[in-house]
Length: 445
Image 1 (cartoon, rainbow, N blue to C red):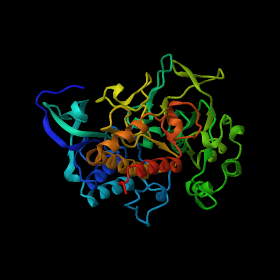
Image 2 (tube, rainbow, N blue to C red):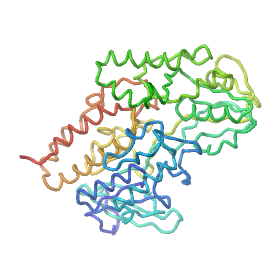
Image 3 (cartoon, rainbow, N blue to C red):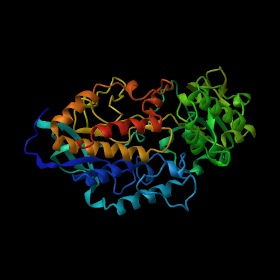
Image 4 (tube, helix red, strand yellow):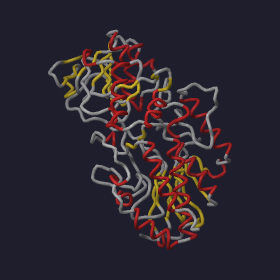
């Protein structure tokens, strides 16, 4: 803890970092719980990752949701029924802008302002240093709490590939327009949703396409039995777990088939043990020879790329769809109990264990849409902060109980142990865990 010199007094307010989807729902639910709120957004408008005009946005021209509309929308603000099952990113941005306008959130948002430091002060308060993204002097404000919603899909995780490459190498976060692919020989590295989508797009534009994956995946179609696949999976939760797992595997085999005959590695895990890769078109272009599956990249060698099986290819453009790493540059890693790899250890991936007035919203990788989970996280955080004011003894008892619970106590899902699955959750189980916490915070009868 430390005291900053002469901080501005906002000790009755909560500071929210970011005005993307998670930040907006945090502001909305804090306001409904009676808090004053200051939200700082480094860009000049709302939307976060879904506003592709923002420098840090990872979306590209053809990006659509990979989760269907009913499982993506906020529970208190539905998307229009006339919209498609899988809305385009421009529609998602329009939805977030409408959400902000409907709940009158704009008055609480400071645009073009970046949080550069947040340090704990006495009695749970926070001294937050804010600066304009255009430069100039900074100021320090003291807040009752800080809610972090700066997203975790904006800082590219770039692979360390030895050697030198004479062609162009770019991370998927910098890819925006398929015109960049036209007539070129393209290697896409990475088998997640973004890697598959770019490989499919390259198949329609490039003269030759290779798709390099390190491991095998289960590729789920966007539609099963005439319905969005995530809705079918959601319905199947009524079945016993073993039967549900068998059914998922069977449906994927029937719809997608065995892609190993195209050179794609076989999955080394069950469908439920990895984040869903949703693509209906990758098998199509593999089958038509427009995409060639190749193994992992081992090194660059001038104009060539060496692969794990010893073969060599000569692309002129390499796109690394290798994901992103969470970054909270304005917080000391110890505040989030982050390990040496930068992975925060938070209860429910939201509540700091040793700082009851610090929370993170949206640090999740669910098997359905994120917005509903971010909403209920925000409800829980707002009610928690209110409980600390109305019944501090009870709040302390809950904090002591919940802050020591390991991840395995509220998430029993087995996942492949990779960085990609740091924040992987089953959305139904996660909502049940939040519901349990909310029940503990209900007013005493």
